[in-house]
Structures are given as structure tokens and as C-alpha cells.
Length: 118
Length: 118
DNA sequence: TCTACATTTCGAGAAGTATAGAATCATATA
DNA sequence: TATATGATTCTATACTTCTCGAAATGTAGA
Image (cartoon, rainbow over all chains, first blue to last red):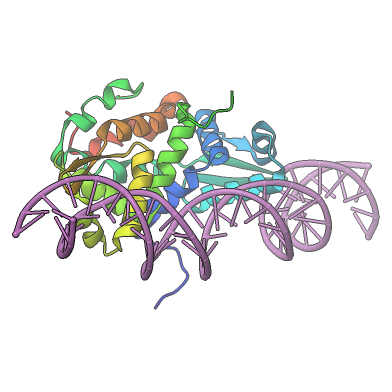
């Protein structure tokens, strides 16, 4: 086997997503997109907001997209990027999976601070 | 100013923690420690369980510790490592901070899948 | 078809991270 | 004090990621 296709192993996917977020520019961009909501933002605007050349930003957006954290859609000449909420949900769920086996205190206060425990 | 002391900036701390977890061995170790609970595990046992030489594991444990994700305590010759639940809580809270401003659906199902919505 | 514009891909040097053997440090016991 | 053991730090090498200018690609309008 040993092919080059995408891996579906949850741990590998988590490592990839964590690595994608483990960068100052990319973490800022991801949070910017989360805040921007479903319409997302245009590639050029993202590069400008982050004060980074377009080619550099394109590289970072590609990493976030391959990690399943953002999605892109072309609209004529512009490319819209938006947060992939499902990908983020998967990552958070994986990180919290075993959180309460040993010690419930860990998660106990976690939810209290969030705006959205709906 | 421009000193070399630890940074307290939440974004930098998040990048450091994400980078610490963005590695197959380290992510496994962290999850192992979360499961192990408050007693934690001994350095040598961790290296053995992960099938990695002690010096390499020591390096990885140092990265996790500096990132605020694990704590260590010496007990005679042995060093116990355990998960730093508060550090993990901080990271998760930071990642979710703005999650519902745009789109509540993102978090909506997130909590349903957890064992510990206490 | 020619030009303009938004974006991505390519390429190469700089910077950072991973790995693990050897040396060192810390603790315990005879 | 000498020896054994658990763990870390040192050091060097291999590997990966970052950055951004230049070139290429895709799309629209004159």
C-alpha cells in the first residue's frame, strides 16, 4: 500500500490541524475567519489584514485548508475563504475525548467561560 | 525592554501549546498523561511506552512542560509527569473564545459528544 | 485577442525542529 | 566513597518549514 492519499486516522489528522494552527499568522487568520462568519473573507483582504505578501498568505491558507480548518470557494476572480466549523469541531472533540476519565475538574470550569453553552 | 523572559501574551502561549501538541509522539504522550490522571507517569515508563529513547523523550517532555501542558515533580530518583489541566483548559478556552459570534452551529453539537458536560 | 487583476505555484536560501548517542547530573544504597 | 540507576543536557546531523520574489494560472472586460 503506502500510497500518498489523505490519511483518515484521527490522530494524524489532529497533528496536522494542530500544526496548521501552531503559527502566529495562521492562528490569527483562522480566528479572523471564525469571527467573519459564513461569508468568510477574500484571499487578498486576508493577506492585507495580516500584513503579509500574497504568495506567503496563499501558502498559509493552503496549509489551513489541507488540515481541514478552512474552506475556499472561487467567485469569479476572487477566492473566498471561510472557517470549516466541522473540522474545528472534530479537533476539539478529539482533544477533549479523554478529558474526564481521570479528573473531572479539568473540564468542570471549561464550559462556564464560554459564550455559547447553548 | 525586549527581555528573554516567558511571554504572557495569550496568542503566543496558544501558538506554543499548539506546536507542542503538533507532533505524533508528544500528542500521544499528552493523551496518555490525561488518561493517567493526577498521579501521572514516570519519565522512563513514558519513553518505554512510546518506544522512544530516553533522551529524545526528555526533549519532548521539556517542550510540553515549557508550553504549560504538563508538570513534573521529582520523587527521589524518579520524575513524575502529569497533565497540566489548567494549561489545557486555557488553550481550549482560547480556541473557542470567538466561536459563536458568527455561527452558533459550530459549538452547538460540540458538547453533546463529550462524556463530561457536568 | 489584449490587458488587467486576483491568486496560486515554483524555487531557493534562511530558519527552525527532530533524533539519538555520549556525557553529565542527581539520588540511593552498600 | 564507590557503584548503580533514572533522568537530563550536550552536540551534531538530518530533516522540515518559512518566506517571498518571479513566473504561471484563471477570469473578466475592453
